Amino acid sequence: MSATNNKPFLDEDFLLENEFAKTLYHEYAKSLPIIDYHNHLPPDQIATNKVFENTTQIWLAGDHYKWRAMRTLGVNEVYITGNGSDEEKFQKWGESVPFTVRNPLYHWTHLELKRYFGINDLLNGNNAKEIYEITSAKTNSPDFSSRALLEKMKVEVVCTTDDPTDSLEHHQAYNTNPGNFGLFPAFRPDKSFAVENPASYRHYLQKLEVVSKININSYDDLLEALKQRIDYFHQNGCRLSDHGLEQINYFSNAPFDLHILFKKVLSGLLLDKEEVAFFKFKTLLELCKMYHAKGWTQQFHLGAMRNNNSRMFKKIGPDTGFDSIGDYPQALGLSAFLNELDSTDQLSKTVLYNLNPGDNEVFATMCGNFNDGSIKGKVQFGSGWWFLDQKDGMEAQMNILSNMGLIATFVGMLTDSRSFLSFPRHEYFRRILCNLFGKDIQKGMLPQDEKWIGKIIQDICYHNAKDYFQFPNQS
Image 1: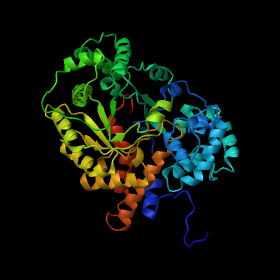
Image 2: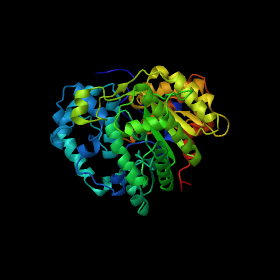
Image 3: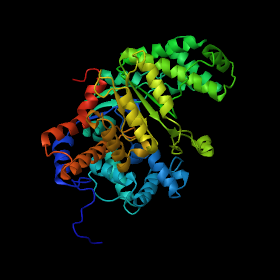
Image 4: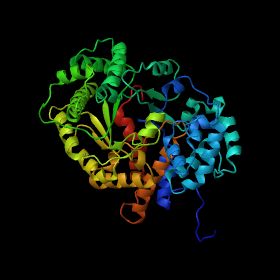
């Protein structure tokens, strides 16, 4: 294959289309530390500075992006989440990679091989065994422990995602022997109002009773237990909450008595759809008031349609690659909910993540309704999330934010990942960001003011997040 002016794949100027973009990335963005304020990394593996036996365990385990692609290619589940050996699973992934061209997995895979292992070869079925052996020899060493991998990527802050019933013992253990980055919990209480399944909900309440030391016999008891856990999380460095919801419900009146609904659930009775929605709305509202009292930031991930494949859900459980974009109404409920909090000046700093690209403009303009001048970028249109954290999705999010808000206040990227090898996603984002600005400069749509545009780039990549979240002991 030959072409004029052809550009090598994944060279130092990958995704950078002109000299302005190259300067912005290499001189301003590239070397900044990373604040990864939302991910799903296991805190126990950070606390214990885990060394992984091989590359499959650190790279493929838990990565439903890769699993989904492999299933699409007809790879048997034995080699995805089944009992195939780690080497066999890596081999199947290697055979799959060439067919992921034009999917972000192709870029991420080779960025990760290059940045962590210095491997420039393109992974395929023929070299998978050799690459597995080379990379596994490295991962199974202290130089590639969980902490070493984070430090290699200049990670300054890691925020894990933690249920109210979590003991936070691993965060505490880490802080008795900390590495060169801050490790903080983030409060994810979705299970605390998941009343659609009374049996599992009552089991959850039992766990909440144990950790809070509060007997939960009423709705008021539930709120008191959650408040106790928020206090506990705050004492352990938590400054963010997070919710993964289809949509945010809103009720202008109270069609049901919460105390009666709670008693019904405790007795094992199923609530109807409207009762469930009302319970979730009121409990979320009360939680958000508690967040505001602590000065936390709240995050809402909205729009995912989860566990679509009931057969596979029964077989291997949630978060395994069977979720998709939903088409839930978002604007009315979200607006009314935020307004309810704002009307009493109890609206926390808020990050809204959208999964349906058709709602991007809704989310971007919604943020402006509740930016009140008290805090720079108080309500944020969060970065492209999940199915939208690829080049087109991130560009769309940033272009819409630029047009309908102020990208200069944007708190930037996060990994939202379960993998310690996922941090080149920040590099991917930074390159895309710099290229957007670089193209505008080349077209004469922005001035050739390198220092000012460079400052904006650095703010988006690092400084805005650092100032916005105010993590403890982060000077």
